[in-house]
Amino acid sequence: MPPPVYELLPSAEEDKISEHSSRRTHNNRVKKVLFHVLAVAAVMFVVFQGLRSFVRSSSKFLHAPPCHGRNLSSLPSHFTLPSGAQIPSVALGVWKASPGEVGPAVETALKSGYRHIDGAWIYGNEAEVGAAIKKSGIPRDELWLTSKLWNTFHAPEDIEPALDESLAHLDTEYLDLYLVHWPIAFKRGTSNELDVELTANPYPTWAKLEELVDKGKIRNIGISNIKNLTANPLKHKPAVNQVELNYWNPQPELLQWSKENGLLLEAYSPLGSSDQVKETLRVPEVLAIAKELGITPAQVLISWHVQRGTIVLPKSVTPSRVVENLKVVALPDDLFKKLEEAATSHKPKRILNPSKGWKLDFDVFDENLPF
Ligand code: A2P
Image 1 (tube, helix red, strand yellow):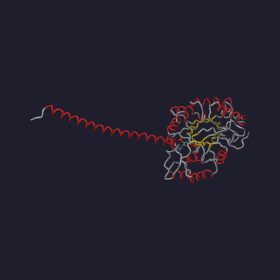
Image 2: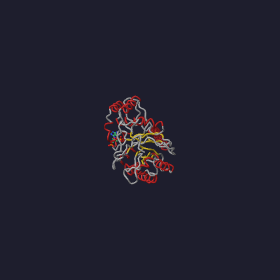
Image 3: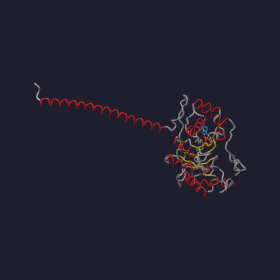
Image 4: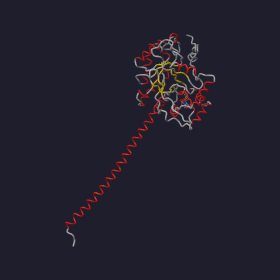
């Protein structure tokens, strides 16, 4: 006899309910597993990002080139000036960087990690440099901008207008560093007519620069191509001296004297400028070190400058070289000494000397100027 219908109905319902509930349990398990997998992935992602930004921020020079088994440490990314300011040790130099080339070079440099641009009013390219900086979007306080007062503007009343022009071209409110470009003053409106009085006595020029530091338009002041400016007591001592330093003209005595007197040197034409760069990069000692460490000859020389304790200002408008030149490493002591000895044991030869071009009847680099 078939069971009464009323008995059958509850039993079918029960089956359905139990099937439904076991499906629900299964779905819940799948959801839980998925949730755990996602949670673990999220935690791993956060940890990975954190580690990556830690590694990036802990050393600017972690992208240093491979060094054939020698354990190379990094060089200082900054030096400290008497004002407490931290100046980046490698800058892009923009002397001889032509219009149309300089902007892209600055853009490449900023993208690849440079934060220091060394320019000057006389280079005639500050507006293009300023536009490239603006395009980069890098906040002003993360950049170090240097410019230089040209020889025709040494008269105190001419200094602020010249500075203002550089500031306007660079599109900035202040300079991190402003240098007196040469210890030579030209008469206003002339291209090379010597102003003997202002050349013989640079203190009115310096006093005006000090005033502009106090006014906030310049953060640090310095000199270039000169040994000393400390005969008179100064309110703000020169923070740096920018001079020619390279394999051919390494100036070890000036470097020593500057260290003893708290004056940081900046190396211009560090690769020998366009005139001598080919020869510099072919120096046997430089080539041997490059080979041993698996880095380029330019990287050997730029590293050597920083390791000597100087700021270095390599100029390049070639993107791959711009990137290459920032990758410095500490040379092992034996190799550093070998290069220092090679550079300082030949007769020094200065690459740049504008005295003749300016028709001066003396050498601007003479220890005893006729004043
Ligand atoms: P370019 O600008 O065409 O790339 P310095 O820095 O001593 O003034 O030298 C600048 C000269 O060295 C320029 O002619 C520049 O050429 C060249 N230069 C800069 N960096 C390198 C490099 N890494 N390898 C070869 N030449 C370079």
